[in-house]
Length: 178
Image 1 (tube, rainbow, N blue to C red):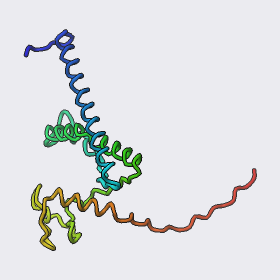
Image 2 (cartoon, one colour):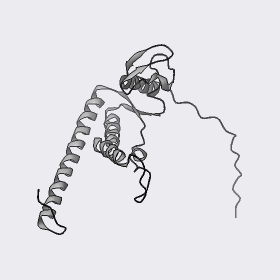
Image 3 (spheres, one colour):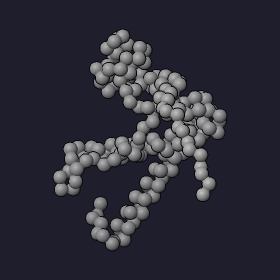
Image 4 (cartoon, helix red, strand yellow):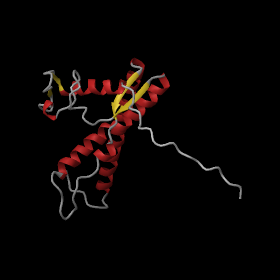
């Protein structure tokens, strides 16, 4: 492939081609999100998802240009993969489709969902043997780690939300006429 100089016609053509390719990718991602969310919304009346903070997850790696941090390239690749998957867009589209179908979308706190046993409820980092295997150190329950986390998220979504601690009653002074 010939080298493209700044300001050249070849460079402009390459930029247009790249823009078309990225736009097509975005259209396909949006179409897939609409298809899958419609299928889920018509099949299920209740869906629980992890409340992932994708904005914080895709923040750039720490460091500066002069003194970059560790694994900056790997972090950039992870960020691209998360953003290209469209997690947040899927969450929004699924919520809209479920609301239109009369269903419910519950967002679950993601803390410890991959370390919690779906059988006994024990939370332990040692239970997560590897990326793919979950073996509870308390009850010995073994299953695929992702499947275990999905069951844990569903159970957490079905539980009622914890009540906030009751504070002191608020006393209000009557407004005085000026």
